[in-house]
Length: 182
Image (cartoon, rainbow, N blue to C red):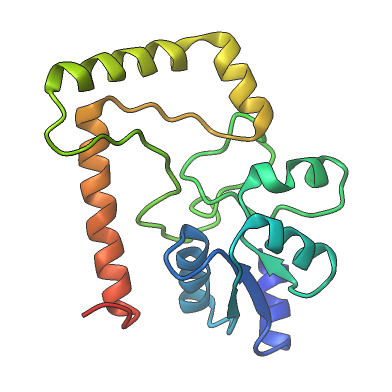
C-alpha cells in the first residue's frame, strides 16, 4: 500500500476505478486519501466488468473491484491485490492483508443479506434464518464459497439487523462529511 500512496503523491490526480460513490470501495479510497493525502481522483464505473479491463488496460492504476472478479487474475499473477476491504484476513487468501490491518479505519464492510418486506411474519423470518444458518454451516457450501473468493460471515437476524443499523448510521455520517447528503 505504501507503494500505491507514493505513486499517488508523485502522480497528482491518479485515477482509481470505483463502483460509484455509494460503494465501500469509494469509502475506502476516501479514507486512504484523507489519511495519506494521496490525491486520488475517483472514476465511477458501473460494474466489475468495466473496472477489470480498465485495470488490465492501464486506464486506471488502481481500482476496487470485488475479489471474485479478479481472483483468477490474482492467481495467474496478472494483478496485484494490495488489500481486502474486510475486517479480518480472508480464509480464501490469508496472504493478503486487510485495509484495517494496514492501519486504515473502515466503519462498514461489504456485506450481503437476505431482506424481506416489512410486515413479514416473524415465523417466516425464523424459518429463513434457520435454513440459511444450516446451509452456511455445511462444509461443502463453505468450501464452494471460499473457492469463489467470498468470505462468509453469517449473522442471525437480530445480529444482522444491529449491524445493518450501525452501517447505515456510519454511511450517513460519512456521506454527510463528504457533502453528498444534508
